[in-house]
Length: 289
Image (cartoon, rainbow, N blue to C red; front, top):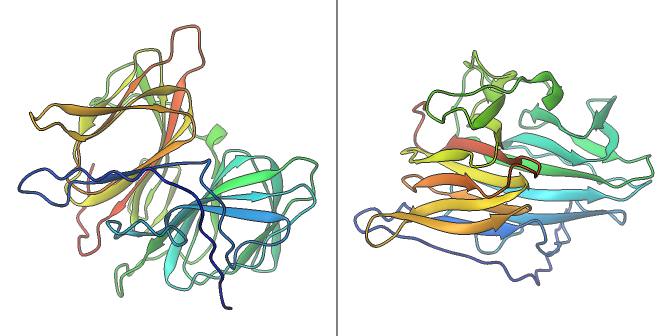
């Protein structure tokens, strides 16, 4: 099907290059990005590309083919989607609806997350009175990348995943480990090939995702709740480059970029939360903790 793209939004695009390492870069987007008419969209649904397909300014991205938000009106639906060369991860941001997949109709609701292998056809219906919104993440599958790919839909909800602390991040930040590779023993779903980790970070007041670097993976942060400072790169003097950020902001980080977060929420406010997805840089099959 021929796809028509109309692009009118203005995105904040930032490149940070550290001398000696041109792979250290990041991009910033927002869920308020402009809509794009694509084969996904129908009269009652709208897709907003953030990275990859539909976004004309994602030149530094290598591993993710699409990352965007799909909104389906009450009583609406979406055209059938059939990505043949990418694995998909979906996350329901709000509402309830029906996932049509392999001749099945599967109820979905807020905070459901799911894995779909390449080539699986699917669509959504929203028979409810409230809009249905979800994040669509597609990841390129290099030829022969995985010999043990999952060939079926896998789905779970964040309510099924306990909050836990990790030794490297201290007691003020808790993690929900949602999805990992097929070799994972710690994640709720051991499903993916290119996606090494899908997780939620929950920050108490003053909570921190300690700044760190991934040498062979790209990563995307979506601020689900709250506010704070995102660390994305280094200053010319080698210090942390911080960016005041709020709910709805989305960051892409290339390999070798310094990444972190400092919560700006007060003790009286709801915890800040980030939905993060990390995935392999093409050409590298190394694992990270």
